[in-house]
Each structure stands twice: as C-alpha cells, then as structure tokens.
Length: 188
Image 1 (cartoon, one colour):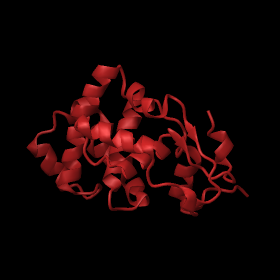
Image 2 (cartoon, helix red, strand yellow; image 1 turned 60 degrees about the horizontal axis):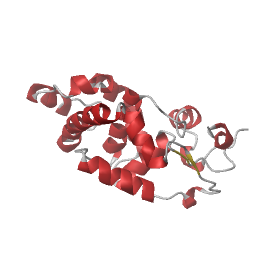
Image 3 (cartoon, helix red, strand yellow; image 1 turned 90 degrees about the vertical axis):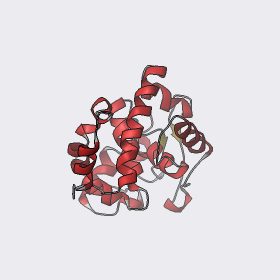
C-alpha cells in the first residue's frame, strides 16, 4: 500500500492529482498560467471544488490561452458569469483577463513566464522535509516576494497564500511529506 500525503484522502480525483501532478516541477507557460488562475479561483473555497471544475475552466477559458483571453469582451464575460461549470464570481473572472495581460507582459520581458516565476526559487525546487501535514506553511518569504511582484505587475488574486499553493502545485517547492511515496520521486 502506498503512503500518501494526508491531505489527499481517498477521493479518486484527489489521489490522481496528488500522484501525478502536485509537486511535479512545471516549466510549461500555459500550464503555469492555468494553475495560477485555478489557485486564484480557489480563494475562499476548497481545492477539490476547483479540481472538479477544472475541465470546465479549461473549456470556458480557451484552455488558458492568454492571447485569446485578453480579447474577451463584455459578451464573453456575461457568458462566463452564466457558466454553471465554473465559479461565477465577477472579480475572479475579471482577474483571469487582467492576469492574461500581465502574463503576456512578463513573457515579453523575461522570454517566458517560466523564466520569471522560477527566479523566486533561484531556478531550483525547494525541497522541504516535513513529517506531518500540520508542519506545512501557508506562505513563505518566497511566496511573499512572488505575491508582491505579481501584484505590482497587475496580477489579481495572488496573495502570498495563493502563491504558496501555486508553488506547491507546480513543483517550485516539494511539500510531499517525507513518508509519502512521491517525496523522493519529485526531487529533481
């Protein structure tokens, strides 16, 4: 029997996400953009809620293609606000559009979003050695710096806690507990 991080429980969707995605280093700009927006959508909600709606988000937001998203008009926003498959929060929907603009500016300045975002961890995954779920922090100095810089660049819904969750999800930090079978597998 595989030992997993306690947070994923036995929900098949959560287990799949834990085993194949969470904590695995991501360097694909589109995927990074998707994840930062999904983490933003989670604000005030549980991650499983967003995970269950992920396919709907991908369809609703043109697979998180920032170049398409920056062209969204009021008609598209109204369509998103009536889409029961996503969280219908005007501020969060508008944030995705603002984030797309800021994302493209970062790509232009740094060559890729990947080049930019991984600088917050000096281009190397932070490997923690937590034994228990309650040891995991809600934020760190790196997520604080990321949040501050993203906000300065126009991103919305990117507080330090959201940034840290993004860092965990995209493998900028390995927060699998040391007994989890994924702990050593994720070390890159």
